[in-house]
Each structure stands twice: as structure tokens, then as C-alpha cells.
Amino acid sequence: MSSSPETGGVAADVQGPTERTPLLPSHSEDLATEHAAENTSHPFIGVYASNVAAEDLSSYSIANLYPQALSSKAAARNAFALCVLLYHRKSVLGTRDKPTLRQSDVLTQWRKATQLAVSIRDLDTLVLRVWAELIEDDGTPEDVEEALWSAFPVDSSSSVNVRVIDFLADGDAPIELSRHPLVCLSLTDTWKYGKHPVDPSATNTTAALARFLDRCGTPRVMHIADLSAHLVYLGALYHFVSWPPYLEPIQLFDTRRTILIVFSLAKLLRPWTYTTLPPLLVFASFVLNFAYYGVVYNTLTFAMLLFALYLEILLIHFPATPSPLLLLRPAVVHPLSILVRRSMARLLVPTAYFLPGLIASNLMLERAAAPSFHLPSLLGLNHSLGPSPIDTATLMVYFTLFLTLFLFLVCAVVYSTIVHPFLATNKEPGVGASDRFWDRYTDSVGLEARKEYFRAVRRYGTGCYFPTPLNLVQVLIIRIPRLVLVALRRGWAVEIIESIEKVLWRVVVGPVAFLVSGLWLWYLRF
Image (cartoon, rainbow, N blue to C red; front, side):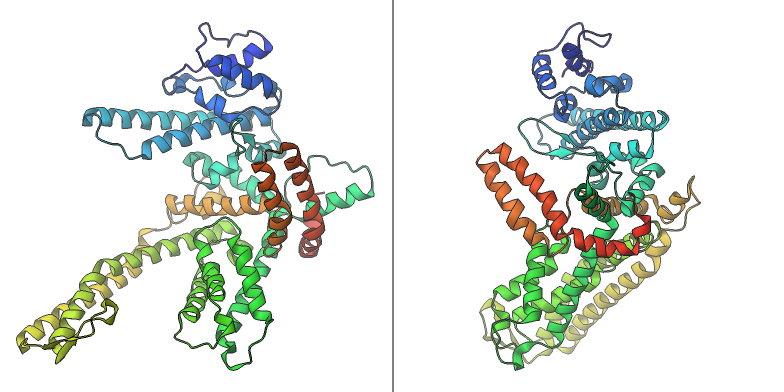
């Protein structure tokens, strides 16, 4: 593994030798120098992260974490340094979490795990040093925002860009950085008012109008538009399930069916999470021609719609975007939502624990009580096993076993319901007012609540966001042509497509953003 000063040598060989130039450059220096020379304005994160040595982290210089071209820009160099450290930290964590084969003795495995733990600790310390340098350098709110949202390419062979907000939202940042009050304050400011304009000047009326539409599309406004469309989708689903068209003549075009198909398809075209299951069930039920034939309440497709509505109602209470919880104060509502979600997850554990025994005792009791026992038809065996020879005493034992397991299940659920909320007792107020709300239950609950909030800000604050179902237009005009051009290696055409995407957003989403932003028009940042 190369020594830590190599990264300083990358920039030093481009600009001339400095006090950070290594005396003995390694064999990878030429490759790093080539990347730095060819990409001075857009340096690669992977080149600098690969040169970070674990044994030098305790005394590593922050100046070795960014190229010389960024030395005069405090926010840019700190953003680049943070991305380098967090990217390297994520790779170290991935190495630790990989299952290891028994290729070495247990002592060697323990020493390796201890070394990784020390490396993570030193990386966290270095990340906090870089963050403290950003705060202490007489920075502005714009500098903090730039440090969180600046994107840098990973390497020349990949189109992936990384940002500090990505590591925060994915849980790959140190706990101290995720809990820092300035992070939440900056992201909350972005959520309400949007990002600061890069070029506040407008040369003509058209540019001023375009800038005005851009400022109207704040993350909060985009979430309101997305949530409104989601409520329309839920209303159509509820109406379709409550008044199914099985008694009506078959219609080629039905408003409810059209809304459900379009909205569910639009939701499926977004990145998949656990919230993708309900629209997947809705879309699959219509693919199976449910709406065109007679509907019976015990059919599979209708059960899929009912289960989708059931899940959608449950997800309203969780911080899954779009969520009405984001209309309230996140520091107050999100920790409670995370606590409820954890409690419900723990309620399912005793159910799953006692369920096999409960099913087995129920089958034995049915076998003992019935005059003849029929095997389940799902096995394809419909014949009887004959009369049961079990006497009354054995029947009572089976009944007692079933009753005992059922009582165990009920007691476990009641115990989890009563005890678990009290395990997360209120804590003493933190240093800041935000800590008092975020961490009022436990640190882990507050950390998970912050991560959910960071994900919401990242989703609605990244690029040109198209609310559902307007993202179908984006897929047809932007994403599909972009995939084709990338496959054909037409880089110049991809840049044109990206510029068209901004114009398309202003035409399609801009009027919607202007209408929704009327609620906070006087709060927008112009």
C-alpha cells in the first residue's frame, strides 16, 4: 500500500515541487499524475481515495486530500476532501462486512478486524477535522451548502458522481457528522428555500423567468406536488376497491383504471424501495386483465388490490416519501415514526417465533378432534386418513399445547407493545435545540430519523425532479434516449440531452411548481 503523501505528489507534479512532494514516489504516481493533469477542473475521487494509507491516517495532512487547483476555494476543497475520506471509509466498511473464508488462523482474523476498527476510527477523526476546518474558515451558508451538494466523479471509467449528502443519506458517514446541528440546519434551509442560485444575475426577461421557475421548484414544493399526486392515486384505488366495476358494462376507457395504471407505472419507473411493492401489485393486477372481466371478491387480482391499499395506508404512517409527515416538523415527527416502525417490527418477531408451533399444534388438534382427517388439498392429496384413534386424554394434551402456544403468542405481543416504548425513554436535552427533538428517544432512533430526512431532501433537491406521473415524460424524452446514446458512446449527444432536460422541466413541471409555491412565494430565495 502506498504512503499518504502520494496524493500531495499528484498535484505537486502538475504545479511543481512543493514541501509535500514525496522523496520516493511510488509506481502508482504516474497514473495519478496523468489523471490530475487531464482533469484539473474535475478531479477523480477514486485516485485520491486509493492513495489513502491506513497506517498514516492518524497524522495525515488535509492538504493531501485535494488537488492544488482547489486550494484557493475553501468550500470546494473541503467538499472534495470529505468525499475522498467518506468514499474510502465506505470501501473499508465494505471490506469488513464481506464474509471471510477460513484462509487464516483466528488470531490473524482478529488482528485484521482490530486494524479495520482503528482505521474507521482514524477516518472518522479526519472527517471531523475537515468539517471543522470548513466551519472555522469564516465560511458562509453557501459554502456549507456547496460542501454538502458538490458532486465529483469517481473515476474515468464510470459516470458515477458522489456527494457528501449521498453518504449522509445512505448511512455511510460518521455518526458525529450526521448528528452535527449545522448539517440539519443547512439541509432544512435547502428543503424550505432551495439551493442558493449559482448565477443570480439575469441578462434578459427570458433568463429572469427561467430563474424564477427554478427558484419555485424547491424540495418542499416538489414534495407537495408529489404528495398531491399520490393522494389522487390513493383516492382512485380506494374508490375502485370499494365500488368495483363487476356489475357495470365493460368499458374500454375507465377513468379510475387509467389513473391507477398510469400512476402505478410511473412509480415503478423510479428507483425501487420497499414502497414499490403496493404499486407493483396494482399494476400487476391490471396486467392480469382484472378490470376487463367479471370481478369476484375472492379472486387473486382483487386480493392484490386490497393488499396494496392495505400497505399504502400503513406506509402513510412511516417516513417513506412522499409522506404527509414531511408537512410537519421533521425533528418532532420523524423520531416518533421511526420508534413506531421499530415497535411494529418487534411485534412481528414473537409472532414469527411461535407461529410454527401454533400451526403444528393446530394440525394435531384437528387430527385428533375430527372423525376423519383430510390432508390439505394444496398437496394434491384429497383422500382421508380414516377415523382418528386418539383418546380423550391425548386430545386434551393437544388442546392444552395449542392453548399454551396461543397464550404465549398473545403475551409476547402484549409485552412488546407495553415494554418497548418505555425502553426508549426521553433523554436529557442535548447541546442544541435540534438534538433535544431528534434524540429524545434514543441516539439510534434519532440517527435513523435523520437519515430518513436526509434521503427526502436528497430525493427532491437533486437535479430536475419530475413528480409522479410527470416522470413518464422524462423517461420517454430524456432517459431512454440517454441510455441509447450512452450505449452508442455518443458523449457529446448526452450533454445535449442533459441540457434539454432542464428546458423540459421548466415547461412541464415549472407551472406546477409555480402554482404550489404560491403557499410560500414570499419565502422563496431569489
